[in-house]
Each structure stands twice: as structure tokens, then as C-alpha cells.
Image 1: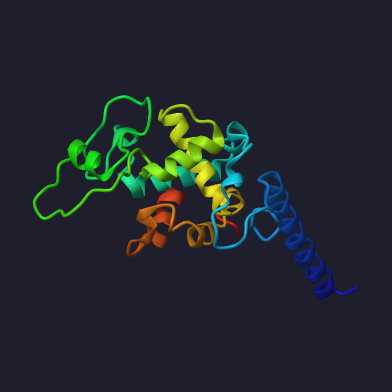
Image 2 (image 1 turned 90 degrees about the vertical axis):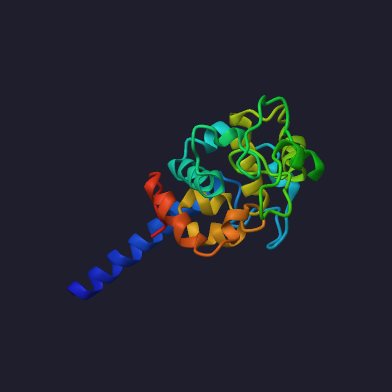
Length: 208
């Protein structure tokens, strides 16, 4: 066996080890090896993918924590009041429930400024609209809108789009492609690069 063959075998074994490592992460996060949830069709929302998630275990992943941080930065700036922020930049008080159930309520809590035409029901660090929050709360048994439950709901929504395995394994581009309909900030110009920058800044690692 010459040196070239030895090098080729080494490269092949290294690639196989990396693939097996990613496959193990996907398995742990309820995913197929290609990163899709076993029960979720591509391009759809599968609400049951939010059920039974071991959130404390999932939050042990530095990649998941970094990704959540990056989303918070893009959605609200992740300042000290991020978990209390309404669409429009106003703040709500109390975490008993999502504070905005209707557009009328949204305008009452955060009046329109000059040049603005409407408000959404988005609230919290991840700017959940009311319907998305209620879906997550029902599927995951979340009883209030506290910061910890907002984090849990973000994980649930990411899982419902088939992106949790991507996030955990550091495949941020695939996660980005799956999530624009969940997070408004990901539909803005330059969002992909900014997400990658904030994710890296927060300590996330990328899938080689």
C-alpha cells in the first residue's frame, strides 16, 4: 500500500466519522439523516413535531443556544427587555400569557407612529404572533409567556419546520432555508449572512 492509498483511506475514514457524528446528532433530535424530522414533510408545518421535546437536553447544545441567541438578536436586538417587546418596540408588563390577541389590541398597546400603517400581534424575544404562540403552547403544554417558555416555544417552532437537527449539527444554511416563515427577520435582505455572524458570535460551530 503506497502513501497515496493510505492518505485516501484516512480521508475516507475521516469523512465517514464526521457523517456518523452528524447522524448521531440527527437521531438524538428526532431527525432523519438528511436533517428532516421523521414525521414532517418538507415545506410543511407539523405541529406534533413540537410534542415530547426534551427541552433541557436540547438546550445543552451550544449550537442550539447560539442559534436561539442569533434569532433573538435579529428579531428584537436581544436587549434586556427583549422578552417583553411588542411589535413596534413598545414593552408589555406581565408574563401570564401572550399579551396581544388581536390587531386592535396590538395598536392599543403600541400606538402607530408617523408613517406606520399597521401592527402585528408579534411579541416577545422571538416575536411570536399570537396564533403561532398558541399552537406551540398547546402542543408543548406551556402555561405562560415567561422567558423560559418563550425559549421552549422557539425550539418547538424550529422543530415543527424540520430544522432542529440542522441547528444542532451546525448546518445553519439549511436551518435558515427552513425557517423564514417562522421568523420575520429571516425574510429581510442580508438575513442569511447576519444570522451566520450572530450565530458565530454567540459561540455556535458550523457543520464542516
